[in-house]
Image 1 (cartoon, one colour):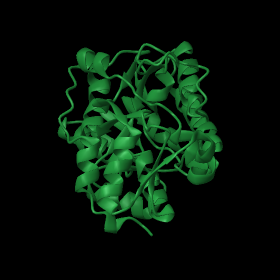
Image 2 (image 1 turned 135 degrees about the horizontal axis):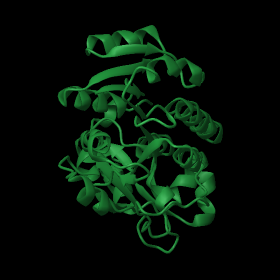
Image 3 (image 1 turned 180 degrees about the vertical axis):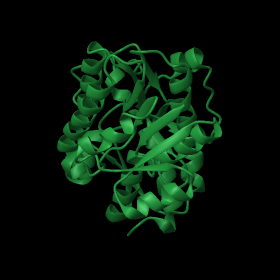
Length: 299
């Protein structure tokens, strides 16, 4: 197949591109700069110059591909709500071209959108339209595309990690360095799910090749890692003290990150594993946190 991949030079997208090529697919990658274009060409990937800030620049590649995988996202969390709305517009633009065709559009969301709000892990069958995370905009746009005749499939992400990056936990590590301590809230029993980036890349390919229209898939290898365990691991590796905060103290200590630090983000990937035959094999989150080089983190 001939695939168009947004985010092709990113943390997850670059691994997806490698996996697609290994599977015999031809990949067109989105590049917003000359440097990104050169990286893609060096990797044997065709280039579509453009940016998610101008969704119409993506369309020439969409018109000449058999499927689209959309992973690009602006991770400036000081503009998180605006960036989620930007993603909605990108999905709307892509959907306009793909509606009525048999060409799949695979979009990216977060596992929290499957939160049943009853203490159970987030699940693939649930679409929580009222979830407070602004990233719900992506799935709302995807649902509208599905109703308009697009072969829409969703990959929901947990904390995606290797020894260089760990999703939102990368920002937490920087915060710990700034604060001089690793903190959790109350007893630290709220949990986050996770998966190694290579396993996540394999899942996107499985969703492309074996997935079904309208389904949501969870890239979850580890269902529930307590925030206290994450904090204690970071503290041990960075030589920092630990700190338990009351909920009332969280906003002042965590800043913008408090909205995420308070969440219980446990999620199941059992249905996805059974449906697609996807079996995560990469290291666990805590293993990668123990193996990373903390001296490389920006001060």
